[in-house]
View 1 (cartoon, helix red, strand yellow):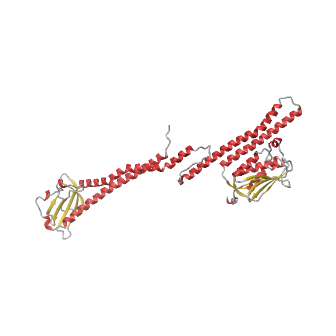
View 2 (cartoon, rainbow, N blue to C red; view 1 turned 45 degrees about the vertical axis):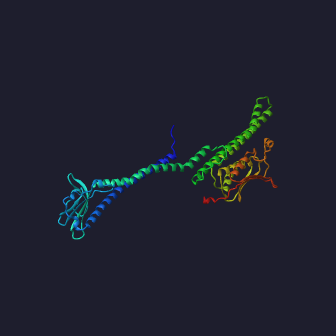
Length: 450
């Protein structure tokens, strides 16, 4: 089984890796700085000893036969940083006045200042500081220290500086690990709540109070709401299919079976006509149900955008002009030059097309059908001046509008999507009947500004 990548492990790896790199650089720089500062400290010590010796009176530097053996006793070196210094003092003629320490005697002509000399047999490196006195160059002092001892002291000081860092590294790593785990705990809690979310119920997702999670939680809740809406739509659509198709399919089956029996020619002709009518009605039901399904899909997939209702009305009227001519209807459009509104273009076209097809298909020839566009509030109207022609099955079910009743259901759903309403009125005193889809969205900018 392939192990899934973990954000927590990845974050810990990057954090601890960066910590180790930074810590290693810090330790290296600290070690080099410690060595350098220890060297500077030793050189300052040599210079201080030389200055101290030159400040003594001349009688303090008398030649003594055992001067070379007056070093520091090993038993007296009780301090870790105590150094074995060697001193040589000459007069102005180069006569050795005093000498102490284990270092070999450096040449008298060694230049003033700091230098590293190779002295003794076998040769050994020595750090030396040489200086004349300030008055008449009467005495010259050389203070020496073994380079090996000097380096050991520098390394010891550097290690003392760097060692705490080595001890602190695992402690800091542990603290960072705990901090990362604690910091990611709200994300882990949210993941657990998302896994436990029952998509079939409308229970909300209780998110942590952190601002970073709000957009994610909002997106999840939106997806859950859309999924629940899709499930409800599918259930409703299935119920509508079963309900609306039951009657025409039963009628088709009945009349198709009757053709097997003994029928007179008029009866056979009537049965065939009824089968054709039932087939046409079944096709009409399928068209309406597909419009419902398309409305649901468009609602989930399409976001609201600014559209021109007037242009939409003219386009739908132009597409149905031939149907109106074939049915001897008078189809007209009453709309302003422009009527920009925010909405779902696909859904509004479905609704208007449904109303127009219903008006053209359920009114007798010679009926005037008018599409009107209102701007305040934005609305679509389809008017006609004739009574609707209903099928007998529609009368039995009490359907009074849009033939089978599914058309109105489509339009009502689209109106609800736009925060509006769908109403029917009439006929009025002049015989006009009106279907109105009013939008609840505020008008948007003109198309030129889109």
